[in-house]
Length: 501
Ligand code: DUC
Ligand code: ZN
Ligand code: ZN
Image 1: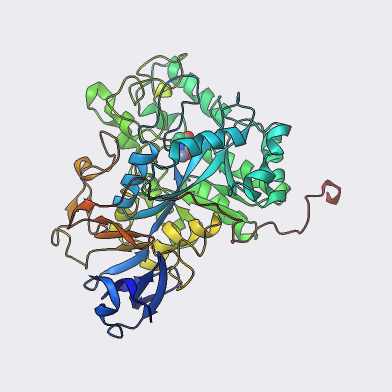
Image 2: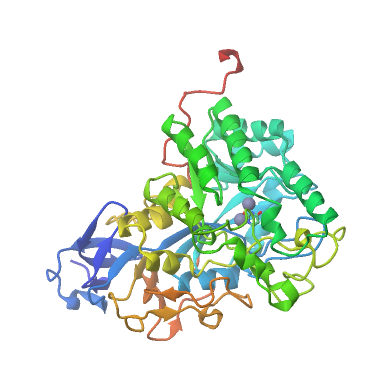
């Protein structure tokens, strides 16, 4: 047998389907073999790592991140992480693949041009592997014609649309155009489900009473705003029999709508994020900085009211309502009046008013550790929602999200053996330990029971926490052409046919 490049022994391998003590042989960037413990001598490999009884999981796949996006709202606010800093942060937190958005403003006539610009920003700069989803702001007839080339030539098999934000919101008929065209090409539509007209009305009513502090961001977008839009999105997808993923679900009531549709067999998928498991409305009411510090946690949909809402979202992870758990990493510097939380997303808006605060929080590096530390889902479920399912839904499986010999990339996270990360107390999360380009983390001070000890990407150690830390190289990350989803798609064969109604 040819020598292996790397042999990892002494770990408990966890995939979405199995948990077993197995040694892992790696050659040419791929999983070469899995073997019972003790069968292989370290001498058959050039390099050996002893996992010491720790869990080993496939590298994280984070399919919802915003990196180096231009401002889309006619104002300021610009995500502070570039492809370089965002993917650097990803690997230090165990995520080896990210899928970022390539955003099209309504004024832009071509998705392919937008995509080319994103490639120019990302190429040669990434530490992790990466792909793109299109963000479609202008679904004109010419743009719809680009869907074929996007999936067939460019390897972009998913796109996101919005039901809110003046600059991006689509009408229902435009949503149907996108769903139909996507369905025909095997593209997965992701949708931001909040009713923009209702939340604008709520915002006006709050303004009339002078209620403009960050916490009123949550008041302007109550669960019903998300639940109604989710129900409408589901109805539109059902009408045209199109697969769809509802992104960043925060509301247990919206989750119940999705679960009901899934129970009827619709190809409907849902995503949630750590902010809906750990943050609440109270985090936006932080008294610091004259009441503005709550802006650090302003994101959309907003974190909900309390532990019962978190419980509802954990339940949705446990029972399979949520297909994926992403970070929605959308970072803005806090102390930055030009591009950060203290700027304004539209020049039309007054400064310091919640409606002007750029929406989004950082979380690419903390996603895996936060969720694993909480131990409210099994390790296999953890792998399913943070790695295997995102890879399946977005056409990367089993190259990513699995550890299949001869097939899967050798992307691994080797964790600490239980109780070995800073003792029984665990590690206290601070922004200083992170590698993003952001001056805060909304999860500051949380206790973590585990953190990636090593991250391995295509056979190369890129993060070695007890050694030199970040050892991956900028530019090692490769662009991933993605195929169609391998999760269930449309229920009926052929084109959508209006005459069937
Ligand atoms: N939607 C996202 O997906 N991310 C940040 C802001 C938003 O509205
Ligand atoms: Zn969104
Ligand atoms: Zn997002």
